[in-house]
Structures are given as C-alpha cells and as structure tokens.
Length: 136
Image (cartoon, rainbow, N blue to C red):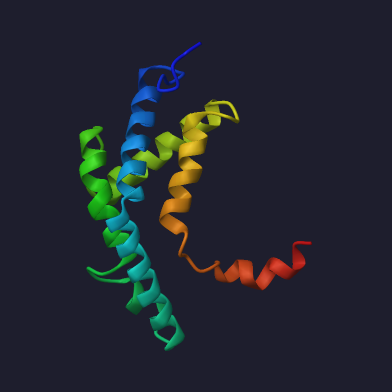
C-alpha cells in the first residue's frame, strides 16, 4: 500500500495538506494552547462583566491576533499573502479542495481538527443559543 504520509491528489492538493500539517503542529503546541485558553478566559470574564464584544475582541491580546501571529509565517512559507487576505485565500483553497476530496480525506480531517484546536474555548454562537431548542 501507500505509506500513510503520502497525500492523494495533485501537487496543489499536496501543498495544501503540507500547509495544514504545519498549522496543526503550530496550533497543537502547548504554549499556543495555553495562551489561547488564557485569552478565551479573559474574553469570557469581560463578557460576564457586560463589556461588549468589540471592546473584548480588539487589540494585541485578542484571540484573532494570536492566531494570525502563529499562522502568518506558515502561510507565507506556502505562498500566501500576509494578513487576513492570505488567511482568507488559504481557507478558500481548503474549502474547495475539501469539496473535491472524499469523505475520509486528510484535508477534511485536518480542517475539522484545526477547527477544534482554534475554537475549543469559543462560546456557542448567540443565534445557536436562541434556536437550539427548536432544532429537535
């Protein structure tokens, strides 16, 4: 059979998987996860004290800033622009590739894993809390 490290698909797909793997390694890091949790707890406390989201989410201590700081050098290494434009372009590429791959593709698994790593401390969305009871 094929060694597990081999990626199915064309060169572009292989590049995307390599990029995902690099992101997973970075986001799995204990230091990143600790900082993510600290910032999420600070955000939760601020919400509890009645501060609105813009005041909570902004600035150098935001979760978004943390993610971008870790993500940017990796995206750049894989040919994406710096900043939010590069991140958006990569997300688009991953969504497109995931749609083309089978259900058990590594791209799909990595996407789900990345989502979990980055959003494990997120509060449920407001709309979800309001409609959850109706989704029986």
